Amino acid sequence: MKMRQSLADWERAFVREISLDRRRRDSLRRTAEQRALKRDIDKRHKRGSVRYALLVLTLIMTAVIVTVVMFRTLYLLLG
Image (cartoon, rainbow, N blue to C red; front, side, top):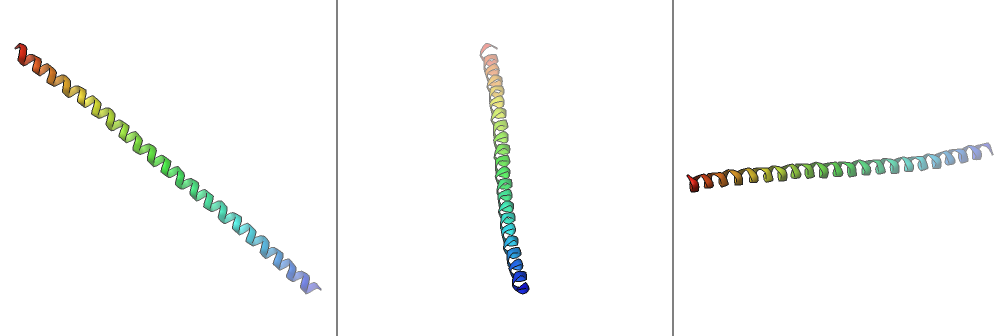
């Protein structure tokens, strides 16, 4: 009787350990997925910021070039 009880205790402990291990693996997988999603969002945000800065720089450079060309043309026409 004592041997059966001991074996049943071992089986319950084994089942409990398997259950805990599954929960732990699921938790680790969810954490890894969340980190990957956060990295993707951060990367996308960084690329968007760089693109926005390039757009602003392009617009400013275009305005400067147009202004310089306009004043040179005006100088040639009036000079």
